[in-house]
Length: 281
Image 1 (cartoon, rainbow, N blue to C red):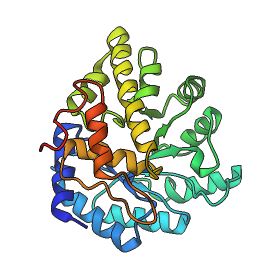
Image 2 (cartoon, rainbow, N blue to C red):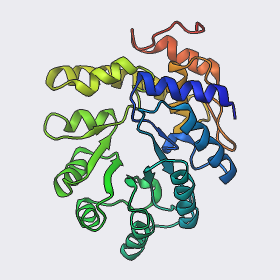
Image 3 (cartoon, rainbow, N blue to C red):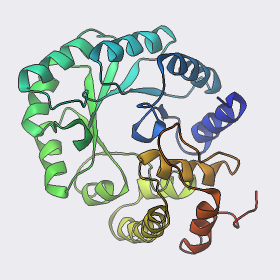
């Protein structure tokens, strides 16, 4: 672990992007770290952030027991906000879904939980599921997910007690009609743009989305030229836009984007998208 660079990156994100920062989301390699690495990285993350930061820890594991142990570890270090997702070895039944939330939300009433609802876990929850679960667990406070507009609307309208967090495409589809949260994904490397997008409405929001889509097409094309496919390959490119010395490598066995491909993305992205010339600090 490059502790000095990790501290620098975490502090810069908290200062430039948002005080609401999280570790081990889809692309944060939470699926790949060992228990020992988890403890080390979470402790450094806590120390690196300013007191005003509102950090969240993502918990990803095939073992519910490990999920609970990692919540206990992070809670002992002072964290109280957690992203959780289902164990993905096989799809959970309705009874197993209930057991999962009892073991997490039910066991830690002083903590708040965001459920990451994604196809990779093989069980997607719908609006009626969240309506029932939010009544049973008041500390289940948010959902993070993708999906088409109809799917997202079902969640927003069926479970209004929960805040729905979406990336740029879902945010633009919903924001003019519904309150929703925004996760900077494609715009993570452009903090000023991300804040402006978050605050935009109507025509300006649509115009900014058009620019985001253009940048994303180039990003997808460049990564598609490599063997990289896991989410972290994309998000580490965003981190490198923010902190140029940030490495693109991933924990094995996953392939990552070579530096020359990142430079090609910088060269071909829409004008103004990259805040630096390729190869420059």
